[in-house]
Length: 290
Image (cartoon, rainbow, N blue to C red; front, side, top):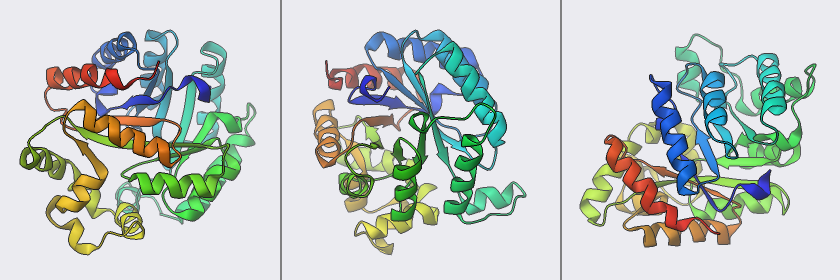
């Protein structure tokens, strides 16, 4: 399956939503443009399994990945049964991305938050111990820190990372070794005016920079508290968001690939206008390697 991902795929909130047909139409368009992989957010709640089922049914060959399934919101045995059903209907087309979410979100939902490493490890144990076990090559772990990256490399096919720089892709590759997958998400703003591009990026990043999971990792990468104020410093924005024309995005994709990534998930964050989003996907299709 990994060899069929291609160099870039699409990560988008628009692949789920209140109207499933809209998401299906987006998937069909992305398939037509030549993308080989869709990365579907899981943390927003709702019927993740049926949303992914619809995307798989609408596209004959695309790989669809959960990015990521919140382990606090889905019973592992239900998840394993779903993966087994998808495997029989759409062989080698589902990647199960798993993540432990964030303390604030878990406690707001009324659950007791336990250490993410333990939570994800236990979840993987149960997936592997199910009546129809989930296979190692079907799973990825959302990982940022070294211990979770080690878990991703030893227990699953690899890692899907979020809000990271190419330097983090190099760290992940070093920890996971040569055979595991390293698949970063890359935020994209197709705007050539620096002030406007950074404004769009800051509006998007503001809630993420309130979450310790992300800021702690960015500190490990050399950023500091001042970089996280008011949606992010110019230095931070320019490091984690690829803005400008498709040529500039291509350079950032190549930086991740050169650092050890296998595939990069393009996340166009200026997505409030559906037509602008589709135009962005079309422009970025030139980055797909033949």
